[in-house]
Length: 175
Image (cartoon, rainbow, N blue to C red; front, side):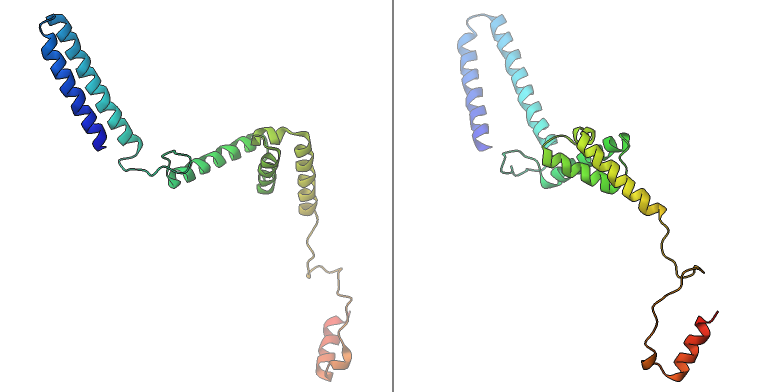
């Protein structure tokens, strides 16, 4: 930063000396150079303000790639990319969380975009099989102890039961 200021002051000193020497040349040339210097100063000022705005008013340490992107910004970018991927997959009819995860993993394995992976015939067939398995599981009723037809066929160990426990078991399991 100090180096920039010293180079600017040297440039202004040189340009002022040149102006004094060239004032003898022509007043139009002097006026044109003054306008050019003013524009250059405004452009430099605008560039420094733009840099400040891009940095959010804080100095950012460049990462290993030399970019000035903070970890927070990187996380935001990642989240927005994930949201856009989910939106694209949902528009293709892939809505289940397991399906979305499978397509993402397939895309990274294949080295292609998520949308391209979702249109791949092998990925589509796997998604169809996963959906069929989920539909089958959802259609199959869960075992329930309250159903009248199913009784436990496993018998307790009667040799370890007391007479009272046996009588209770017999009353509950008659009929």
